[in-house]
Image 1: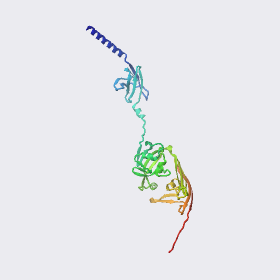
Image 2: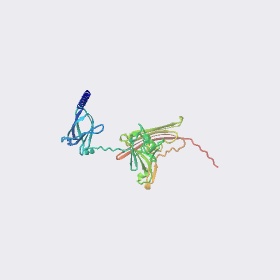
Image 3: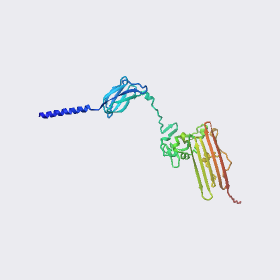
Image 4: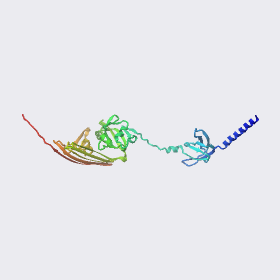
Length: 366
């Protein structure tokens, strides 16, 4: 019995000595440093410095800085912590630190709340769709399209705009009759022509609005006639390009026709040219082509008092009305440019027409 108790006492003494040895070898260190103002570069006295355990944000120790803005927190065990500094009229400072076997030294700089508010960067986040008065404006870059996509594909991505297989455009439930580029006709105001010949990546904004009639714009008197119109605003560094078309047909015997047209534009400068040949009919340029590739066919529109309009056509009178098969060749070019205080518009045309035919008549008098 005595020996048993002696052994138990000896075991207890040995266990106590082992625990004391572990505690004496525990890792403790000091976290120290200074707290200063970033604006005036001065140390801050009596700032509150708090050490929190990182895993559960439990407060471990807290101190205040001295008159020189210095602090020292002793006996901090090794591990991960959060240091938090607060001071009146200053924004709270928080940061994660790792304490090891060697002392940790921190140089903490904090900002005043007024300084932070002063340096807030205000960014104008442009929404994808904006409504300004009667105009709905779409930011083109907000809608993703495939590389080298045309404007038609871009319009299909925009809410409220539909494009069918024929290239006809409907916006806000109404058919779009005109598509302008930077507020002007782009060789043609036909929606299908413009939207298929322009790439989507050169468009900055798409504007949808109700355009007044030409007569209302000219006279300043609203006649109530409006048409749904789309205006494409191009990016400043993309206002240049070219497009064209070619047509040809033949019966591989004696009849054939051909048409070649090209256009180039840069900024407000536009150049267009065409060459045609045909011996099946006399129609070198249709109405739209004559307006946009030639000189308009000598057509002039004037508006008089009371809203009256008058269309005048000037020319040499050769309309191909003779009987027979025509053989014609034509060519033309036009150049236009606009400046701050004026504009220039010039064109030249060549036409050659020969009509061969045999006619007969039979008359009987009773």
